[in-house]
Length: 400
Image (cartoon, rainbow, N blue to C red):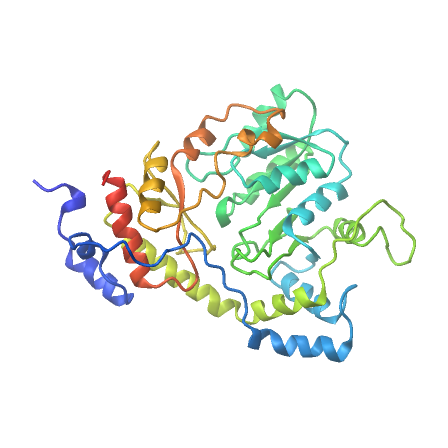
């Protein structure tokens, strides 16, 4: 009797593939597969092309303003702020890590105090905490949505080796956490909460919790390097702005120790062009994600994040696989010229840079490190490549 992976595709599955203009991965599975095809990268970012950016570059030429909060940056920040609730402020920065660092600095937390962070995140989160003169306290995440829970922080307050002064929550690969629950924790404990929403440009529309978003080239709205803070706290925004510009605040006097982390007019030109095409680009990301999900319908062991490609988009495709299978699957796909990426690797706590920092039980993080893998994904990924990835993943999961 054939296994589920060997059963014939249903007609509805074939119709779905046809509707999305992609080859049927189930049929492909039963054909000889030529893997001496072109290499499929894990990520293939696409920024606005030269023609889209050129009108903004001409505005720079006309204004002869190149940095220091010129007209393009002012417009870029205004358009970004318009995505959030009324009264929200946006402060741009040279990159998302700096934006997170300076936001933590602006909260004026006790130097050296603990900041609760998930270990299951990109290392930039922990680096930002340390750069702000604070100490990361690595905590575990929920096994279902891969994000830190308020209950975990509440429990940690009882055993933490020193006072916890704040929390950084991470939007896992672009999925948003339960913000109401985090606002409740803030109200109950008085702890400031910051949202590291580096990959969540699409879903981040509420700024009552200070929210930091990356504009790196690998993100859905990328400008090369950049990031921004969105917040309804006008004083916090003003202080972060001051920290990005030598401590100036309405004068040429440095009132506080600060840095230079301003975004240039050239980066803003790319950002404005990216915003011009955002609605179209979002639809393209949705289409690519839906094709990926259709291609994987015959692989019950492949689990997508809830809502990925339906309610929200992001620039990566991180999937859950059977526990302990990632090493072998990654090797087999690589052998077939299909590149994968463990975007968050094994968790921050296992990086040498963070080896000495305190942590709680991280059993879920360690399980995720053996079961979550980033598959190839891009805004313009076509049906043939998606079908090839699906067929190769089927073979990899079956041990072939």
